[in-house]
Length: 192
Image 1 (cartoon, rainbow, N blue to C red):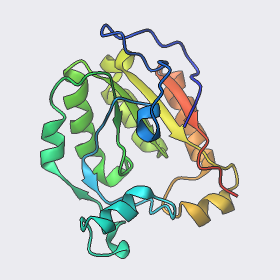
Image 2: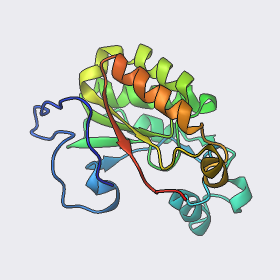
Image 3: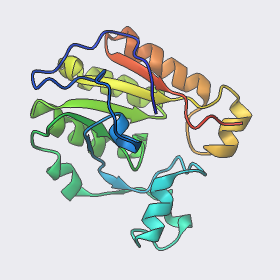
Image 4: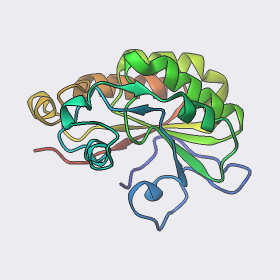
């Protein structure tokens, strides 16, 4: 899960930064806390751990239900507090146009409580434009990390059928960087 940043990352007042070398595994490699506000994901990636966990723990009746995103208000409300360290959002779904209002509310809850937030996404350009505009005052607390596992449109459509194309993800990366946000790229899983 290692990645590199395209801008500098000053340390947060608690001593935690986006660049902190972490010894954890999984999401702990990138953050101290993980938050989401939905169950399901329209991107419907074939390798999604959250989809299989949701089925395993009966949060969905069957795998076919996964693309039907359900907003969980209690999860949005639970984000309205200060957490220790970097908060990754989202972790079990993506920020798609259909759930953008709920994701914005969650992000505002996190950011207004002075959290450092790592926004992880297979980004829709329209979503990133909205986030950059709506959250501009929180720029110093945000780092975007976009997943680009292949530059092949065909490969991405096979593995990530509902997600934006690699070209759109790169456009979103360029947009966020151009607006002065910290940006980074996750190249995993490597899709072939």
